[in-house]
Image 1: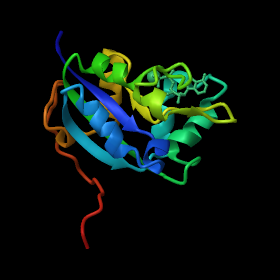
Image 2: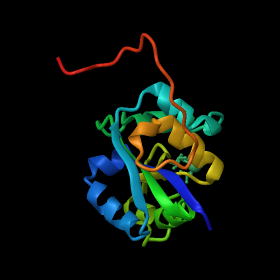
Image 3: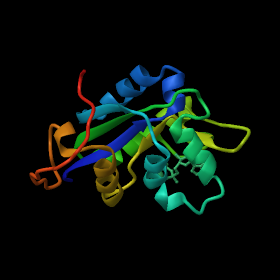
Image 4: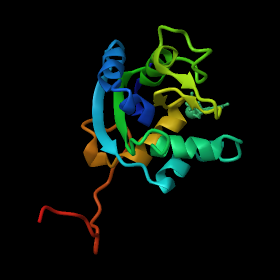
Amino acid sequence: MSVEQTLVLIKPDGLKKSLTGNILTRLSETRLEIAGARIVRVTRELAEEHYVALKDQPFFQGLIAYIMGELHERRKVMALVYHGEDAIKKVREICGATNPEEADPLTIRGGYGRITTSGIYENAIHASANLEEAEREIKLWFYPDELVYHIYSVQETELKDVKRLVWA
Ligand code: IDP
Ligand code: MG
C-alpha cells in the first residue's frame, strides 16, 4: 500500500439531486483526506479531454453533454482530490459499479444512479480507476497550488502575459 491521490467528480445529476452532502459523508467512511476541492464549470474542451479514452464509444456525445451539465440545467461539477493510503481503490469501492443497475445498492452509484431512457448511465460520481488515470486526471482538473499535499513533482515557473480575472 502506498499514499495515492484520486480524482472525484460529483457529476451534475448529483448536484441537481442535492446529493453533495450525502456523497461527501459516504466518502468520509474511507478516512481519506481531501487535498483539494473546487466547483468547476466544465467546458467542452475539458469534458472531451477528461473522457478522451471513450471518444469512440457510441455514448460519447451523450456523456459529454451529461458531464457538461446540459442534461440537468446544472452546468457545474464538484471536483475533489482524495489523498491517503490506497485512495484509488477505497474510493472506487464505495462508488460501486459503472452501471447503476449492477452496482451494489449500498454503494453511491447503487443508491443514487439511474439509467436514462437515452441510455446514459447517470451515476452521480466519477472516480479515477487506476494510478495512471488518477495522475492524468488530477493534473487536468487542478493546478498544484490548489492542492494542499503534492505527490507529483512540481516546479516553479514565471508566466509572462498571463491574463486572469481579478476583483474590480
Ligand atoms: P467509470 O466511470 O466507472 O470509470 P467508464 O467506463 O470510464 O466508467 O465510463 C465513464 C462514464 O461513462 C460512466 O461513469 C458512465 O457515466 C458513462 N458510461 C460508461 N459506459 C456506459 C455505457 O455503456 N452506456 C452509457 N453510459 C456509459
Ligand atoms: Mg473511468
